[in-house]
Amino acid sequence: MEGESSRQPGTLSEKATPFTMEQLSKLKSYFEEGGVEKATILIQQTLEELDKIELNIAVTGETGAGKSTFINAMRGLRSNDEGAAEADVVEGTMEPTVYPHPNDSNVRYWDLPGIGSPKFLAGEYLKKVKFERFDFFIIISACRFKENDAKLAKEIKQLGKNFYFVRTKIDQDVYSMSKCGGNKINEQKKLDYIWSNCVNNLKKVGIRTPTVFLISSFEQNLYDFNRLNKRLADDLPYIKKIVFVLAYANRSVEIVQQKSKMLQERIWMSATISGGVGAVPVPGLSLACDITILIREIIYFRKCLCLDEASLQRLANITEKPVQELKAIVNPLLLGKIDKNIIVRLGWGATVVAISALEFGLGFIPVIGSIFGAGSSFLMTYIMLTNALKDLTESAERVVKVAYGID
Ligand code: GDP
Image (cartoon, rainbow, N blue to C red; front, side, top):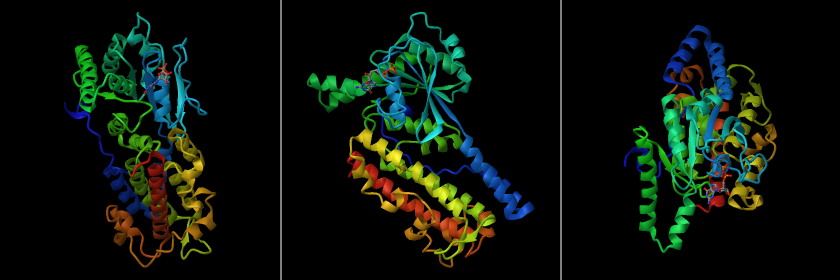
């Protein structure tokens, strides 16, 4: 088995910035032509573009296969939560239903029912659901491999779209095994058998390297659920990957750390904007900075790290922990309204000393390092946001450990 075939846990450790090398050199020339102000415009545009990026994910499969439950799991919801896709519904329609991600409504899952009929025509079906709008397809299958799944997979591939074949309800297979006296070795053999069966059936219809994952929508930290997420993220264009990953529900410390790295990559951009215009002295802070940008970014970090009220509640629901227990391990100042008083009280700016941007490890963005020196609003904002992100990340790690009982 190779690639997605080898069913080993993956790692989530990449560094990401919405700025490619090409954009960085553009930034440099903007700066040379028009100084910080012109460079700031480009950064602002990039951040605005990032806000508008949409991700449309098609989830298809036969009625009862587990589409709704999967869509809920991907969004950190249970089937009876507000905004959840209803499970166990007898589908009488072929109309796609859209389910936005609660962490970011630009990440949208589409439930595409209706592939069950015996006369199923994959090509017509894909035309009808307007396949072009989807970034990729996930085919959900349970129990036996179905002919319609294969037909659809082949057609999606022919249309040049990515698809992932997800065999769900694996927890049920494992449970049945244990009832028949199976042990861990037998369990692994059975999982390998199911996986090979899916791969071989897809190969039979001409798909050379099928991507098959075995998951349970109820046991997300077991089997291939996290590996599937990693693969989906890795296959996306860079900028969409950021959007997809930052919307993840926190299921592991690794996920929290991956998000934190991505957020860290955006700090220099916010800091540059703040270093350009709008910096004012803030009582209680040693230097001038743009408090509006600071507050906006900290609230955004908190949401991405799932420490906002709604995200904590969803995590509590899914892990069946009292929400108060999770809140108790978060610094109380981070839970309430974020305003300038809180920022001063948290002391994130206290470490600003005479230090140059280059010394602070910003050498990777040469143009920025040369614009701003010690004492600038840039540096103040940079350090404050870095400290804020560190505190929020540590809290998010503690929360996920308690929620999932991770040591
Ligand atoms: P849909 O018709 O494709 O949307 O399927 P649903 O999501 O409504 O799921 C059908 C049934 O399968 C429901 O009773 C779910 O609770 C159950 N189900 C879905 N996914 C899983 C899973 O991963 N494990 C188990 N044990 N049951 C599941």
